[in-house]
Length: 166
Length: 192
Image 1 (tube, rainbow over the protein chains, first blue to last red):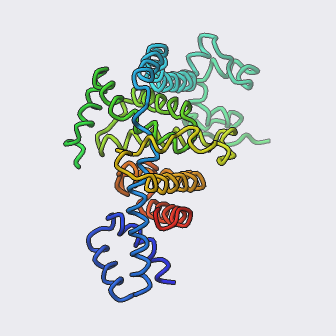
Image 2: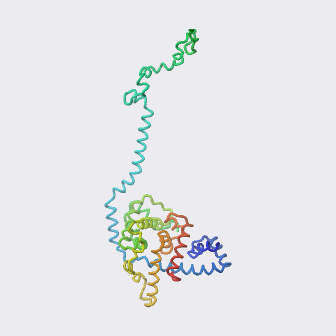
Image 3: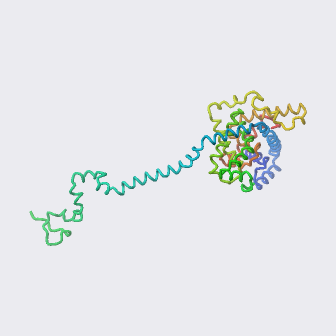
């Protein structure tokens, strides 16, 4: 089982792609394992043959270079805007996103201003009782307002008073 | 090779500065290899040439994002491999075997052998047969294994460069190449 895993290392060793320490470890194993040593000989033979033959499967002598280059030039000339558009696109997206965030924030932060100048409607409860909206200063004296039916004892309204009898 | 010492990296940095002469120099140097690489995937010369052209169009368009972290060839083959693998996913390529065509239809392997006059007729015949079996074996490989073994054994990239090209780990590349090696060895025999 361990030697089956080692087969992968044999291919990398034949390709010269193992780090030095790992290659040394692999060669030490080959000295002690006849089966792996036999497999290594087959692997090296196959790797050498593939290195020799695979490049010959790729034709490079009869490629119509000038014609291909002409077609590449035509394509690049035909679509220059795409390149500019591609560069602008991320910036446009960022600018749009920033604009949307700014508008949303503006409406939330400047909400009282929009209400005051009539762009937005006030909340429903204030529409029903506009005097509360206009007379918001009354809220400063809310404790006195809540206790308005108590008989003042001469103290300040904020301190409240004794409730009325009867 | 350090990226800084790769002359093709310097050319690509010139392309980044919109130097078309540098771009065409890179095209002339790599177009044949990229065409051959693409042909191993798509089996059609015309489509392979289109993919090679597409690779260089993509390269030019993406020039501003190029960073000289590795050899130029690694970046170029990454673009080419992605295009080839995408092309393979198209419906007309699902039946891979049908793309092979008769032997010699798209690729006359004999014409590719250097100095054929130096070989005897028998040697030529044996070599042609090995190449045909190797090509058949390549077409049977899954796309990732095919890409890995071509990049490593035909284009001479290191395992680390293959990993960068395919966007996977070196360990994954080791497995891909090992499995591809075993399959090709079984298909071709001792010669491959």
